[in-house]
Length: 287
Image 1: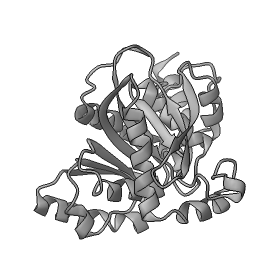
Image 2: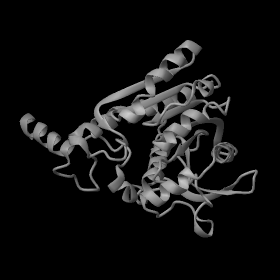
Image 3: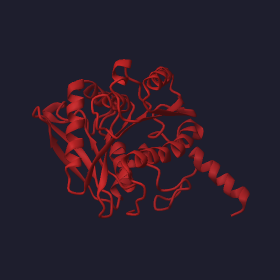
Image 4: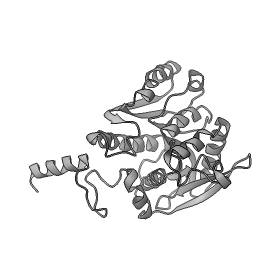
């Protein structure tokens, strides 16, 4: 293919006007997480071992979660994946599997487990009913549930006793605030989630990475105050704002005329770099 044709194909792929066959390696590499439409098939086709588990909490609740194991025999650090307002969707489960592809034990809980009718959670619900359940989870329950799944995963024979949390939207805001609750947290990554109060920032010990879309004013207005306060406190808060990208860009990769995909291409490698740096996973060859 000529250079001109390659550039044309690249542009059309970025705009979503043509698609590669599912079995093909995408132009931007198979290491990016799936977008919303492709997540169920990506998860179904994964060569890694995933399982749905139930984790008890000290208060007697049970948290449903997807546990994804990396391939290979070396001990692996843990990453907890916190969903957004849409709840425990195939997308967030596939995201956990993608972290396992990078060498982490990943666990993605349904944070609203037991809040639905008959003790169900958000699985299979439309966005608005799921959000209603997600927002009904109290802060004490949030902390208890993240602690429970993190401790469960770190107690696995194949796990190292180090963990990070990655969250999206509601889960991003939750991740940032949770960092003030857990002194042994190795790292927190906030995808398009609002920043907590100065009081919470003062309790944070873990390094924080924030990844945001430029077209997300409601969230972005909280970035600079947090950055200034974290700097004043001598704490680590790095952030990137991706040009023209919107809220939820990692899920909605084909929206905004390629801006969300461009943001994904930058944010995901940055995510893995940050996790490997702070969890001590320098190399991984198990894929």
